Image: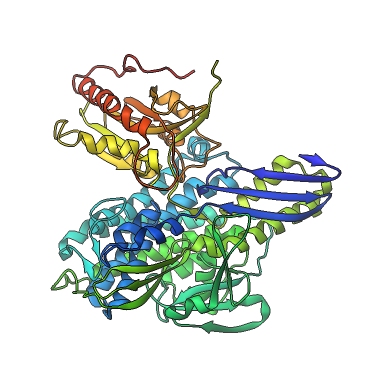
Length: 448
Length: 168
């Protein structure tokens, strides 16, 4: 739409973004004046849905928030309930949970890299077109993904919405030998994952720099997945000292507010725009990457994570994701190598009147849950802060910056189609998960 | 030919009528031979392709949004018809069934026989339960899927069930 030098681009539905979202972009002459991402966010529905349920139910119910990252919801939910009940799951049970989470990282990242994100860099309309001329790469991606899937099936009982996870641990734990076939698949996946890092590192990346604060869990000594302390940095403020706060204090720092253009809440960290997810994780945890993953990162041009180099080009997030797949594969292999079947599949988690919190690193970023329990375990309050809501403002800023850079280069002549494509790319860099989408076919027909 | 038959109900039971596919699959449990694979899926292509690996026949049950809508109306589509309807407009979770079928075709992973049974939806907002028109159509949809299973078992080529409204 064009009107006296003003044009508005509307992406009513974003292709290759999980779930449902829309973008509204206003351009006046050669200046972006507005970039609003509208997302429909189901966790609010689930918060209400959970009230009155038993304290054993959140892992199963919240797993349904996202078909791509159900384990993240299960793990944050379990932690929060256990925290309320004064139980700490550690030892082999915690390691099994971490293995399950590695499976999800492998699966989710492989999907995003190969089927959703790579087409952007290779000038292909979608994964179907990519599969036609880079078949080996897509097949490799599916192979990696199936390895993650195999971990979920083995530990979760089924590939989607795992049913074997419970508050306190698992319904059943595997014997050592049951995990052996997974190790064989993971060794193949390691070769595939390293090949994927080389593949994406060779893509052509637009110049871009983001200056958001970064928030990720930090678990000194290992790359944070299922545990850690929320840690924030502001790398471009030259205030290199990370700020830390305990998980139960997260809501004192992360403030969500309703904005008119979205049903989702948008978040600020101590009043500032921030980013969670792979770029934040890599900046805060890079020094604890497995040596194989760190070497892959260096070879891919990400600098030296062990020396604290960070990646601030959001378009290179695909490379960081690929490195994280290597990390998850190595971590999964380590856990399987060291695993001893625990004597009991779960600890008793007896309810009590209390409030508990939990936070883990979903593939897309920090995922926080808080539950209030009555004496008999009935849930009286539930709070879920998913990564996408936290990232919404940063995504809008990145879109605005990318489009402005394009307009600076091309002037007002930049055509709508090119700007639209750029917006989609800037959004897909962050892999937003506006989950719990419906899955219908959709079409318009003329009827007389 | 392995004779492997996979019935997949695609959808999300927490999104109203989008739960139709999973509801059909649940209804078929115990009513089809044990070696028929019954699966519920969110339609994510990696897992769909894995489900179809080695299958002779893939039967997919899916919700369909038409504009304008006649909720409860049933349709039977071939793989090519469904692949040609890749949404593009309604963003689905990751990739939709249309893209999934097209991807399977590009990778030579499409089972020899594919049939898609779909029901037009009325409501896909967050919440459980099917709308009245879709619930009313469910017995006929289950019957059609059951008939496809029988035909697959008998080795007949899939063809649209009689009475199914063809897509324009």
